[in-house]
Length: 414
Image 1 (spheres, rainbow, N blue to C red):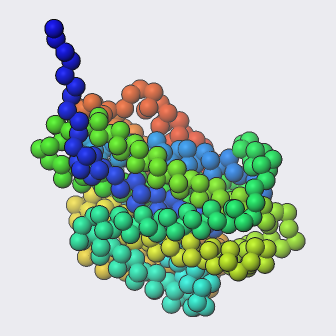
Image 2 (image 1 turned 180 degrees about the vertical axis):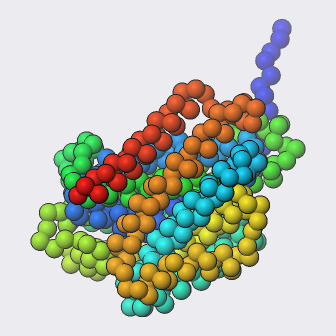
Image 3 (image 1 turned 120 degrees about the vertical axis):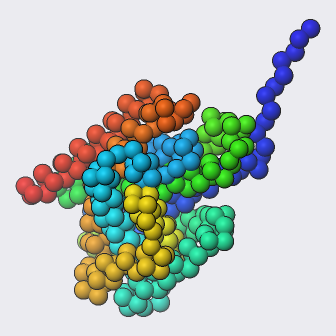
C-alpha cells in the first residue's frame, strides 16, 4: 500500500522574510498628497469622487503585486532590469521622468510635513520643511542597520496615520446613502477631473513601483541558494498577502479622508480650500481632539513618506544609471524644490494637489515596462504573467492614460 508524502512546508522564518516591503510601499499611498487631494475632493464635490479613490486603490493592488513579483522572480528591481534590457536612449528617458516623479513626490511629502508642524507647533513652513527633511534622513539611517528596523518604524507610522483618519470617520459619522452614491462613476467639470487625476497620482505612485520591486528583489537575493527549495510560487502567496493587507489598510485611510471631508464640509458656507481649513474645520465641528488626531496623522505621513521617497530616489538612480549619490546629497537635491515652494509663499495645498497630478503622468512610464517584463517567461520563469493578468494590467494602464488626456483637454478648454 502506497501513501502520498506531503511536500515539506516552507520554514516559517523564510516565509516571514517576504513580509514587509508592501508596508513600506503603502506609506506612499497615504502621504500628504493623498490628504490634500482627498480632502479637497470631499469638501468640494461631496462623495462624487469616492469611486476614484476605490478604483485607484483597486488598481494599486495588482500593480504592486506585479512589482513585487518581478523582484521575487529576478532578484532585481525594475530600474535595473530596464537598464539591462532596453537601449540606452530609452533608459535615459525613463530615468529623467522617474527623477521628475521623485521630485514631485518629495514636494508633497516635505510640504505636508511642514504644514503639520505648523499646525501642531506654529513653526514657519520653511523651518518645518527642513525638520521634515532631517527626520526623514534619520529614519533612512535605520535602513543601514538592517531593513527590519526601517520597516518596523515605517509600519508603526502607517498605523498612526490609519488610526488618525479612521478615528475622524467614527467621530463624524457615516452617511450610507451618500457613500453608496459616490461609488457610481461621474465627473462634474474640469476641476473634478483634475482632482481625480490627483487622487490617482497620489494613490498609484510610480516611485514605489520602482522601490517595491527592488525591496522584494533584495529579499530574493538574501534567500540565495534556499530559494529553489522554498519555491518561488509558494513565496508569491506570501507576497500577495503582504500587498493585500498593507494596501487594504491604506485604502481604508484614503476613503476615510474623503468621507470625513464630504460629511462635514459639503455643501458648506465654509469651504475647505487648504489643509489648514480642514484642520480648523475639524476643530470647530468635532472638537480639538479630532483636529489633533488629524495633525498627528499628517505629521506621521510627512515624516514616513519623505524617507520612503528618498529611498526610492536612490533606487531609481542606481538602477537606471548604475550610479549612486551619498544619501545626504540625494536628500539635499530632492529637498531643494520643496524649500523653494515653501520660501516662495505658494499655497501649500495647491502645490500638493498639482504635485499629485504630475505624478499621475509618470505612472505609464513605470507600468508599461513592468508589464512587458513580467510577461516575459524567459525572465520570470514560472512567475510569468498569465495572458489574463497581462490584459488586465494593460487595461489599467489604458485607463490611467485616458484620464490624463481627459485632464489635459478639459483643463485647457476650461
